[in-house]
Length: 83
Image (cartoon, rainbow, N blue to C red):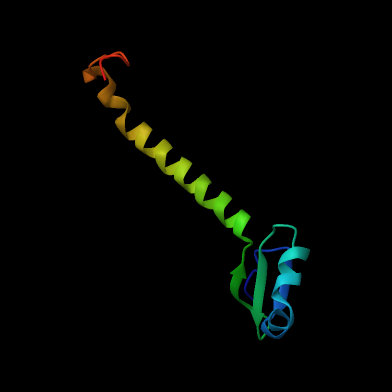
């Protein structure tokens, strides 16, 4: 049995009936879409998706900062006026 990684799940048939109502009822949480009682997709409201993308971007920027920490010793100091 596959794990359902959402607190709400619906069948594809239920999704077809009124997708907007399901998204509204989810309160921003993902909805697992089931086909034959197995998760086939996750429906994520737009605001939640945008927040996830922002968190991923922030994480990636953090990785870049950590990778470049060793370059700090060779950095050239400048003021904003010099830019």
